Length: 411
Ligand code: ADP
Ligand code: MG
Image (cartoon, rainbow, N blue to C red):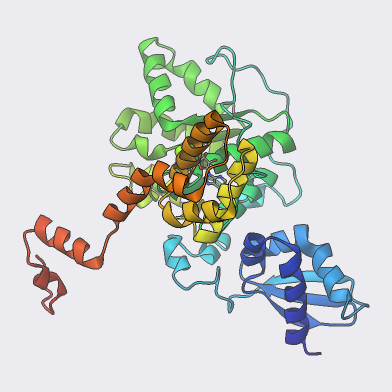
């Protein structure tokens, strides 16, 4: 049996024993590069996969290998640049920066200062009650966890980064910047990360808030001459999670104050997690110093989920809401509502509300009637290259042929 054959056989086994999403996420683009009597070495595309396989799948993989080669008892992973990171060639572009450039980035001072095994700075120190917020609230909602989060190719990088941050906050990826369109799970991931950190480090001082709320609180603090207390409370945090920071656009005063909070936390090795509907470079009127800070950490995008992931999410939501739908209905919903997950949840909530009231299980036809408006509005919105070219031409006062033609004129 060659190395390749052995690995194919092992993959075949693993595929049957773990979920499709997990299998794709962690085993895509792996190979067996070294096989000795007692030891195997796998090549994996990036550091996340390495950590994940070594931590979570080691025993499973070894068990499976031993069915073919009983003497093996050691497993290690090496990162190979020859493997396409995250499978599809477009993904690197999508992520804004390559994983390698992030991982190998000399994230200098901080990573050096905090040696590998040292606990994250003061994550276990007793916290002093912050003064500004009165009764302090973390802003975390237990509803969101990693357990009820479905991983797909659209969010695997962001998910892996969040998990890594939850395990060692303030260490590897700081700040962590997650971006993507509405309803794609950013808030869920940020909240789940906060909840997980609290589980791992129960004494840590965490605050989740939205940039909008941060701004409003700051303004009212300024009005009440309490800006200093406000800032002091923030810089005492171990973890600051700020959602929807695109709200910073055009708010100079907030950017200024936020910069100081950011700097202070960052300098002290405290974890900062941010989300936005777009990458830093596309947030208009963002101060350069903030932009470069954001870009200096880890940036991961979330995209639209594929059909398979949508199916898994619908099943997860039905399970949580304790409601059953026939598979053909689940498939119908997954195939027809694909823009974002909030819409899928909206459709489910509507169906559940109606049919719980009627105390009956819906048929496919009934479901179609109920969510007809959602589905048909999608169809109308569907874009074609033709429509895009026409709109762009119209906006810039050009003819569609000008865009499609050979001319390179600036206009
Ligand atoms: P965003 O903050 O990106 O606008 P949210 O995090 O609010 O999106 O997600 C919208 C809804 O979809 C939430 O109820 C969330 O729980 C759910 N959701 C999004 N992604 C997933 C996922 N991968 N698995 C399970 N639920 C998800
Ligand atoms: Mg959100």
